[in-house]
Length: 66
Ligand SMILES: [Zn+2]
Image 1 (tube, rainbow, N blue to C red):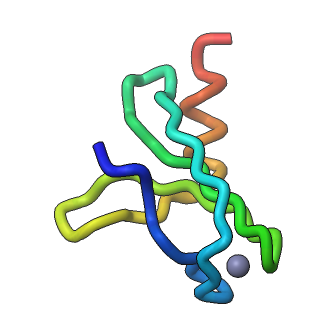
Image 2 (tube, rainbow, N blue to C red; image 1 turned 90 degrees about the vertical axis):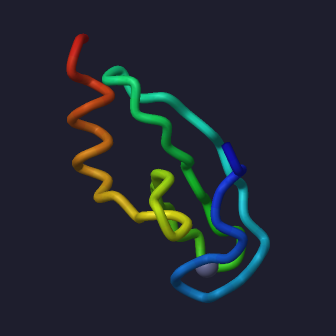
């Protein structure tokens, strides 16, 4: 699995923190935090790179079994 997008979708900056995670349903995602604009995004691997996923979707799935 690649380590995530190389640039921020907001400011196109490359200073990102990328944190691979696995949701409780087994979905592999990457949490991306931009150092420049403080944007926070979640991505999952897709056919053509990385697909952005809504944060409420992540929260719903990651809290499913609590
Ligand atoms: Zn940014």
